Image (cartoon, rainbow, N blue to C red; front, side, top):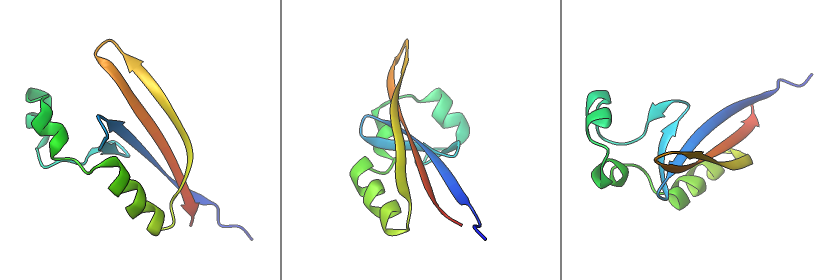
Length: 84
């Protein structure tokens, strides 16, 4: 009997993975993230290519990627899955 899949949703901005399943991936705390939208915020997050290589080695498969455009710019949403 199949046990299904687990899923992971990542947000990428400026070639950095900024959020995974709603959790900020950088080194700043929640209040600092809101107060400090700067290059430093993005620089503290993992690089996209390195992150993709890391999660791929853990068995995650990219199943969807699409842009989301806001007034302030565009982000990419990446959806991964792997067997439970």
